[in-house]
Image 1: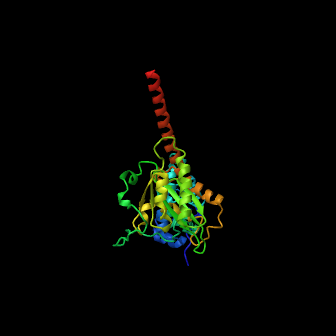
Image 2: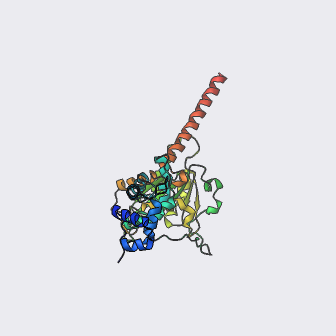
Image 3: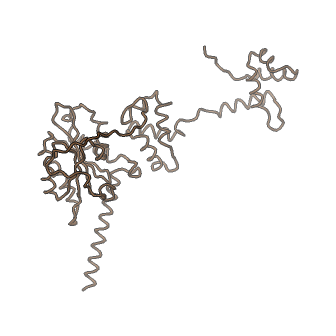
Length: 356
């Protein structure tokens, strides 16, 4: 049976003091009081008067009570404000610990926490609350990071006129320019034909979701044309706003040449079984799976619900965006574009007036 430790009472301290005045050893006093002699030595050292270095029972008792009152268990996750913030973002918004740690300093200036501290809490003291269920992969135990294993052979694509991603310009790779997109389909129940087409802008990570009745190439072509024309309509310059599109090797992308000719864009295809080459859209699928799990029918979700998921993703902070949201990043890019266009208009007007 586990022993229960109790602090010394005032009566025990007085008896201890009296016996020590009689030069009785600590071990013998411990036997008389029914206490460990080490506890008595420790209590004497901790509660002595700092000025006189004397052990006075009443003063020692007051000092011990004050210390016990002020002493508390260290608050999890640094302090109560951070603790509540982390649990709220993890449970309600399902943010990852890294996003929570990065967003904390933006929402509460002066407060900071490392994401590893949050992970240690989730898999340590907070494990009894099953907080790991709110993480993306719902693992009960943390897994060590392992290197990605890639197949030796690369299967060729069956898409006619496909241009390899190896030919994609570097400006697309470094994400410095707006207008380069990735696209993919997300399936639900195998017996259900309905799918969701996902398009992600690489720089701002802004996502658009569209529910389709099936994954045929005609449906994908029609859906892509409607969305891209809407995006292109925002541009008042001669240069197209949508510049490139990165696909996988799915059969739904067979008519990519029709789309590229209609919208005047260039398309590039990933290598077979290299889904990480379009990592932005794959990451978005992981976020969508929080609301539409694998194997669940997409038909039962309305267009309004799909739109709600899209808004939720675009309002979720991301580390790669400096912990800003895709909507905030897209708005910033749009404001820059408008400013440049307005500045060019003023310059043209000034040159015309000067010539006259």
